[in-house]
Length: 186
Image (tube, rainbow, N blue to C red; front, side):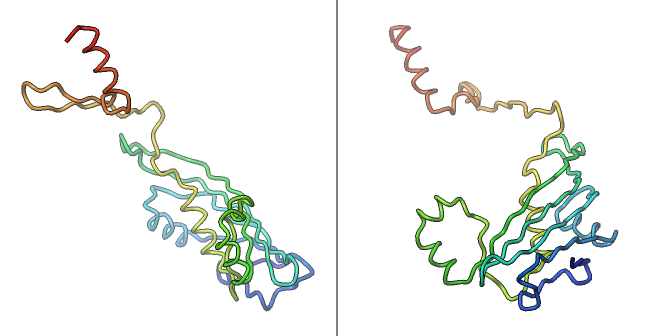
């Protein structure tokens, strides 16, 4: 069992044993956690966990499976109140030779049918911190919202003009107005 910490979070493919999985678990110090939080514009980042294994699949393909865990705190997009979110992500990435990757990318039907959007070109080295960072960024809530907070409707218009509301912008709002006009006999 290989254990990797953040001082050497790079797995060189040529150095790996193809017969046994290479296991890893990244650990993070306080400075790295602060740096991640600053990079991602988070209030806080706690309980980081990134653990998994890299396994050979045939002669020239590898599969990375891992679990990422983190507790993040972000500003609510409406009230700016801190919102805490627990993230638990399972990661599966297949690394294949460039020729196979290009073949699958060219045949979009096969790529869509397989549902394999986690396929990457096999590099000479796999940088675990990059996989961790990318997965964390994609898992963060885009628009964190505090419980019970809703975006109210504001209505603006010039004097004498009926203000447009959110409901008026819906695709069938014009038909409703036309129906009302016809019912009034205009």
